[in-house]
View 1 (cartoon, rainbow, N blue to C red):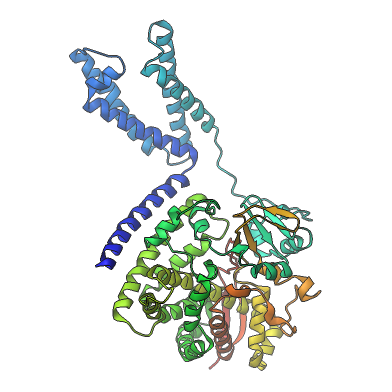
View 2 (tube, rainbow, N blue to C red):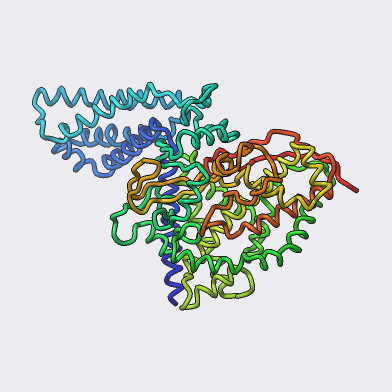
Length: 581
C-alpha cells in the first residue's frame, strides 16, 4: 500500500513538474519581442472578455456610472469585442520579424495614444489618484519598450573568427564549434598560464594540469561530487541552507534523480560503489564477452554487404546501449526512446545549451524517470538476475544503504554515462585507426596490440572531457581564493596531454608509451568509472571484428563533433570498405 501511495503522488507531481517546465522553456525560447506581443495579446483578450461579460462593474472601475443602453453597447463593442479581436489578431501576427515589427508598432501606438488621452484628461479634470493615474505610467513604459524592441535585430548566427595567435583563453571562444573540433591548443594555454582558470561566462573554474587533477580528486572532503542541484537549477545549494532544498525534495519524491555513485560523496558513495561493483566487476564483464561478440556479429552483418556504414549512429551508439539495456533488464524495443533521453541528459552538461533548452531537458528527465520507475517496479515484482533486480533486492534489504530512489537514479546514471562513453571512444578509435594506415596495418598484423591502442585512444580523445566538483568550504588553489560552493571542472582531457606528466610527445599518438594506462579518461580516485572494463571489452571486440571482416577502410565524409564542453562526441563517421568473403 505504501508503494501505491508513493507512486500515485510521484506520478501526479511528475506530470505537473514536466508540463510546468515545458511551458517555462517555451516562453524562454521565444525572443523578447514575441513574448511582449503575446503577453499584451493575452491581456487584451482577458480585459475584453471582462468588459463583454461584466460591462457595468468594469465601466464603474473606470469612472463610468449609470450607463445608458447606447453607452452600454459602446462599452461591450469598443472595450470588449474590440480588445478581444485585437488580442486575437496580435496573437497570430508575430510569425516572423516583419510582422512582429508591425505588431510592436500597433501596441506602441495603442499604449502611447491611450496614455496621451489619459494625460490630457487628468490635466483637465480627471483625478490623478484613480485607475487612469495607475495606468498612465504602465502605458508609457509599455509604449517606450515596444518602440525600443521595434529596432530589435536577431543575433548574428555567424561564429566569430578567433585570432590567428590567441593570447588568452577567451581568444579561443571556448564554446565555439572550431574549439570543439580541436581544443588542445586551448588546453595547453590553460595548463601553461592559467592552471586554475575562471570561465566567468559559465560561472566555474577549470583545473587543467595532471598533478592538480589527481591531487584534488583525492580530497573528497574539500571537493564534493553532489551535483544534482546544479544540474537541475544551474546553481548549487546555498552552503548555509538547512534542511532539504526543493530539488532534494523532488528527489525524495521520485520526480528527479538523487545524488548517487559518481554524484555522491563518502561514506554513502563507498557503500553504493560496493553494490555497483558487484554487477560490473571483472568476472561479470568476462561473462558478457560471448554476448557482446554475438551482438557485434549480428549488427555487422546488417552493413557488411553494403560496403559502407555511418558508424556513429548506426553502430557505435547502438551496440553499447543495446547491451546495457539487456543487462539492466529493460525492453530492447525501447532503444530509440532511451537513446533520446540519454542524448538529452548529456546535452544538459554541454555548456552550449540555452536556458530554455536546459529547462526543456528537465522535462525530458522527468519523462525518463517515470519510465525507469515503471520498469524498476516491474522488475522488482518479477525478480530475475538482471542488475536492476539486484538493485531492487538491495533496496528491500533493511541493512542496505540502497533505496528505491537511489536504485532508479543508478539506472539513469548507468544508461547516460555508459552509453555515451563507450560510443564516443569506439568512434574515436575507428577514426584514429583509419586516418593512420600504418597503425591500421599494425593492428591487422598484431591484434594483441589492440588493448594498448584503445588505452592511447582513451588518453588522446577522452570521451568525457572532464567532470565537476563543488567546494564544500572556502579554499585557496593556485593563489585564488574560492568561496564555498564554487564549481571546479576537472579537465581530464587536458591532464591526459599534460607534458609535465606525459613528456614532450604528449600530443603524439604513441600506444607504446610506458605509462599508457595512467590516463584520466575514467576519472581518478574513488570516483573512477565502474564501467571502464565493460567499455574496454566492447571496443576491443568491435575493432577486432571490424578488422577481421573488412579491407581498405576509408572515411568518406565529414566527421563533426558535438558542440559540448563536457563530452567529445563524434556525431558522424561515414565509412566505406571492402568486405572480406
